[in-house]
Length: 256
Image (cartoon, rainbow, N blue to C red):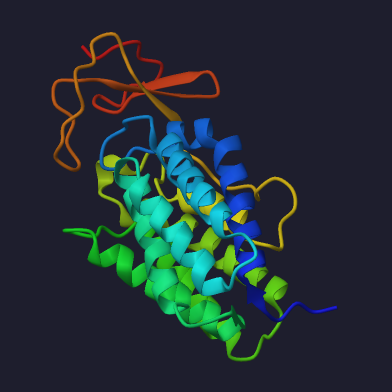
């Protein structure tokens, strides 16, 4: 039987499920992120932000979609951690604004809500950069809009959104600055999009990830400016090989 409406209860479960997967894979997300700096806390920040949204949405359980979405947005805004948490909170705020007068929505209204979520997130950034979480969110929203014109089933829509997010993820290394291409930061949204998808009931789909990034023994603090690494050596490990992002020498133990 097709599911054609998303109400407040369904949206609440959707946020709870997404938060669970963010928590389960936060260490993976911490290792993946290298943009704008490899700070190693992106997954944790997103999880804590989503957890704050769940906590606030739980206070209005069973209410209309507009009320539950507004509560989730409020919780995420108050509990936002780091850049990734702020972006996630802005997406929830944009979605909540789109459904502010709705008790339940269909697939087309979900697509409109996703579009507004991406618009709100972009507006919150001083200089949006392609090849990041924003790019994947935008691709997912556009695919949702394209499919929703003829697809009334929420599960089929969600499957299409996840496929589009993964395809956009594959393109992110080409969009990021050359020095940031080691690991696509937008893998975050691939996990999050799958986690929030009501069509998934198990682990998120496979995605291609770059090597984990860790500072070597001579590493200094990462630069705040995008695309630069000052006198520090960020050593990347994949399988059993090691190479330095500065000197790019295979099996290097440190920069010379």
